[in-house]
Length: 186
Image (cartoon, rainbow, N blue to C red; front, side):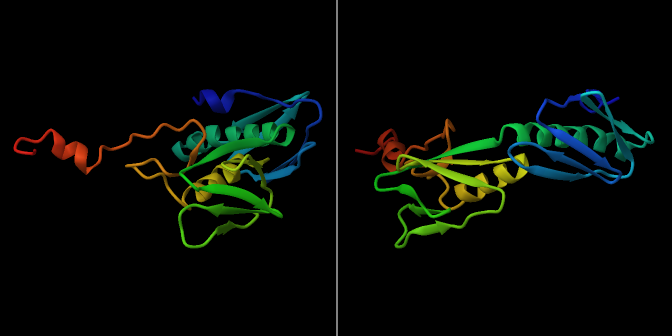
């Protein structure tokens, strides 16, 4: 019995949900999302609640139950208040700026790196070293934020690069720190 799958989804005012059998369309002030539901699941709307239920009790159906309930919940939440991931650029001379709807990173390469706009995602720069990635689709926001992070992953020795806001890094000791405590090193 899926505890997450059986929990009803409250539909707040300002969000409309339209159920057409294989798909669920969620529309709000921030945008619109369509979720393709598998045929083994059924979604029903009662008053201001959505309930996802299973048509059979197979193992695969049970595994999809909680997943698709959460995907619908994320869509209902996202069209009301967009999902957001924040990134920071660390390093001397490293910065980011907006150029139209694209982002331009200067992160130690011989050339600036341009990250093109993604459909359904908004970029916002704060200062010269912070970026906010926001949108109605939680999965897409996380994916785009991770792709930005991959432009220059944080260095394990100095911590320079792009990381999530508040992310803690384990900085490795350098070569000097290793040899300083070794016997016979003077």
